[in-house]
Image (cartoon, rainbow, N blue to C red):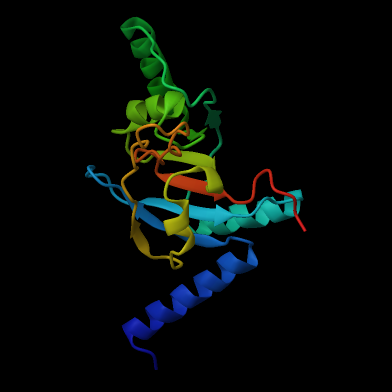
Length: 195
């Protein structure tokens, strides 16, 4: 007879096996510096070529993350560049998004980074309870991807602080993940040739 620890280890091993079978390359949780938010869940997946693969991955993540099936999906897309809305437009956007989420219990999807409209959505919904705010980002293009690639399945990882651009550098640092998103799906190898 297995003890409690043995049962937990066996369940974790089964979960990891099921995640790998579903094509999920990494999965765990992230704590963000300078925030008191609970850990956000993350998964790294490869590009998927057919609906069946996508459905399998979504079903497995839904089970592992204990997510309710959303009847409504709100997708907010836009630029990652800094932008400025006047206070009246910002307040109107925030009221409308909050009302839509509260009324429909929707899952909200953005690009998941702490920039542009995605950051605005995160700030707008940061205090909402029982909300799924899902960021879908290209794995290789976000800050901290190297550290996440070395992570172990199902562990909680400290998300590294983003670096400022070096003086004289023409390249902007990669965008950081937004700490107000509850879940992040990071898609690997976007834009690369597949062998």
